[in-house]
Length: 266
Length: 232
Image 1 (tube, chains in turn blue, purple):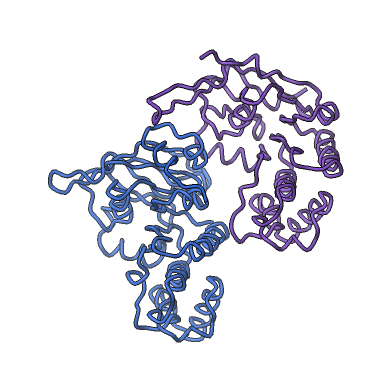
Image 2 (cartoon, rainbow over the protein chains, first blue to last red; image 1 turned 135 degrees about the vertical axis):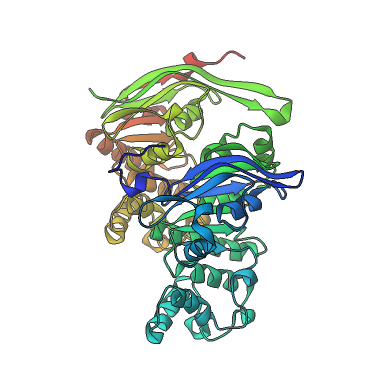
């Protein structure tokens, strides 16, 4: 794709997936997935368990090697680079600085035995912060932003409730001001009241920070609240895609209609 | 007069895959124009496809064929074939839509529900809130409710919050789906005043209004939707 050299950053995709495929032996987990994600855009990937959506998230975030296809990311210097060409060190650097990854299980994204403040501060130290006072101050302001009582800053997340852990994981991810966040079922396993609070929080943070995000969820309400665009996956393939409200209010594919019609009214 | 909306030969049907693939025709041959400062009211009985046409203009329903031309940032853009990003940009800058029901986001106070579209286009939070307050006051929402999420409000209060949210921006195109349906006379007349102000400001409006008295007050023209009936 040829881009106008003076096109503003906002008009250029941040993440580009081209014909992504992933096979496990004879099993195809992901087939021919292509899309572009723009700065500030939130894309929801929906589908039932086994549809390939978590595999896709791992391919996009370079945690899993593609069988074929390519994922490219626009680095801070404005150049779109193939993730495979970055090498392990380059990908780790992206993960520390420009990307966030919110796991469904906060225990995977946090260090459960060290303090909440250290969990947030650690990401800052990884990008070169070394002034203890500033790190602690930034960590506590982030705890406030995610509605965690600052008096709990020295407590380890294993003493936190599930909802608090998930909010702490979000703070840890966002403290380095990433441009792209991957989220894997971020509200899965939480009570509905806790979910609502988390969703509202994420919605505000994504808007305020202008984050781009890829959110994997089986919950269409999460997709509706958080995302601009939706991709519906089934059997490793994208079967329908479009604006979130288009796909949810006017679903075309049989499987999407089944998903939409399966929601119980509250 | 500048045409803000130019619809030609738009068609919409639903295919219900879960009901054996039944095809439900909604409308076909939808063609009309709306100029700046003009209010066009869609008329026709329930089920004729009025709301569907509004949703097609908003890009919420996808057209099977035809064109939905919208004057967006100086150019006619066909929403029926536009990219999702273009549609989002049109919704941010050009088209406002007041649906029949407020889709309330949990925990967000009414004042922020109303102010949000302005903040999204770069107005400062303070100024957006001030304008939101002005609208809530005109629509007779008691001040004690402003800081509460509208999910607990009455139907009429929710509808007025929804109207305030739809009217706060200076979008050049406004789509109104039964804006006065659940309102008493006093509040309905407040909405009529707001609509008149929008028309004077050159906003193009497409509305669905069942109340004939209100229709006569706001309509420059009616478009009979039954002429777009799609034969089964």
